[in-house]
Length: 150
Image 1 (tube, rainbow, N blue to C red):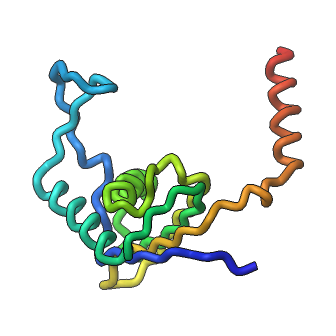
Image 2 (cartoon, helix red, strand yellow):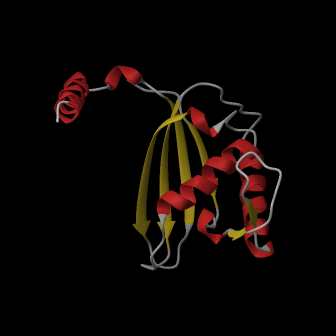
């Protein structure tokens, strides 16, 4: 079955959320935490948002989605893809593509190394919860009963 997909590209690897520096001050935020984002990181995040907005064609997704992300990396340097994904999730929201990153029900992260090349390809599909393996849910229930019985 062919699913409708939205596809977006980013010309470079976005910075990881780990690049944010926690500062200890009393702040009036929901979590009580404040973070300082270095200027170079902030500029890169803004560039990601700009690139996504230029491709969005007023896309505003407000349904559960499956997000597939392919990272094209120029070298074997260690990168924490799940932290980069956190930044990408925020950028998808800030660019107006997703109404909220809590709409991401499934995500697949993959990296490929191509010397001298870099970028990100993002594919977003409507989430199909019909593919949930009922056997896995039963296995989880069995495990929880076993643990709770200890």
